[in-house]
Length: 174
Image (tube, rainbow, N blue to C red; front, side, top):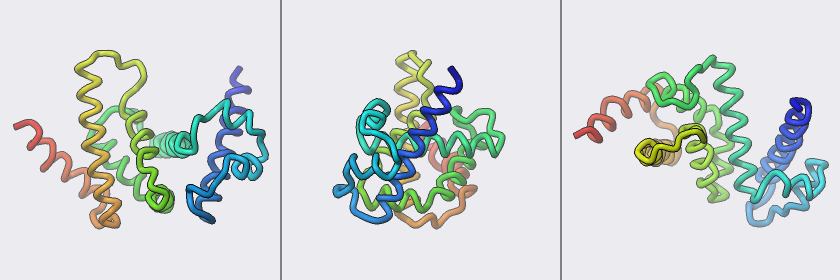
């Protein structure tokens, strides 16, 4: 069973890498599924078995990159919000600068938010209050990320984490 998942992950990663390669060469709206599958050397059935849209492909890639980052940085609480994960999240985001540029040029920031939300809210959460809280926090933090990207990463990841904890969170509590 694990072998099949590894194989599926490999195919999905090839699709994602092919899409990103195409994004570097042409406008988002001009990229076809046929081009993606041809470059990834997979069939259309494989694409549609795993993804519903090109945005889903980008979300998947971001999640894979986050998993690798969190493992390589030994993050034990990769989906729980703490000061350490805030800094790590902004360090990760700074590392993804080139992909962010492609995402923003394509106007698909929703793919970035969807990945961010999936990291922050584990599927097991069912309590309505927790879901509302997590959605509120994820939109707010995504808004900060969006502004930081638009400001060309002027602050350091550490400064961004400090701003959250010293300026934003106290304002929300009042």
